[in-house]
Image 1 (spheres, rainbow, N blue to C red):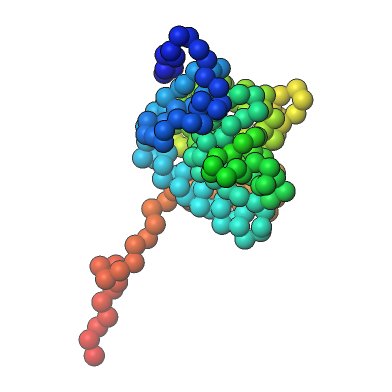
Image 2: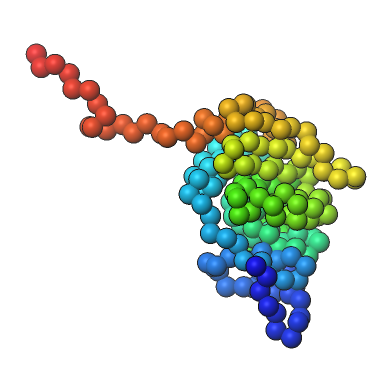
Amino acid sequence: MAVALKEGRKLTLEDWLALPEGPPFYELENGELVKMPSPRREHQRLLHRLATFLDDFVSENELGTIVMEVDVALPTGEGYIPDIAFISREREEELLAPDGKVHGSPDLVVEVMSPTTRRRDRFVKFRNYWRAKVKWLWLVDAEELTVEEYEWTEGGYLCVASVDAGETFEPKALPGLKLNLSEMVKPRTRRGRRGRKRGKSK
């Protein structure tokens, strides 16, 4: 839902970055604010586990920085809050500003789609990420547990991987990484007194 602007003036990235911290949260498209819907439980569980998994891999291999739900000011004038973004070590000084935001196009953007965001993620934001020359884009379906990987080319994004639920995803954006979304969202076994078997008394 676009927010009406005073006197019809379009907002700039500077206006957007100066907004008070939410909620509610807004993204900036074509000079207008777009209110972000409240996330579903399935979306947030997958997002947090995926972000942690990626952060561990990137940190262990000293590849750069993973950020989750951080403002990204794109060079095209759009302002987005992608679910996950990756900035390579070589570009950290350039993109990671003192204000805690990302200024410029990340090396990788991950959008976790839900029923309320799927159309916008797949069409509007997809097009704008390409215009901003975001090199890699992942579209993750929180319900179907599928993932698509796109690589930037002059003619548009090229789909280089399409992985179904239960299959292992080995992204070209992060060589050496292997992940399985179905395994990632499985309930974790709780260990404690109630889960321990009582041994026979001697």
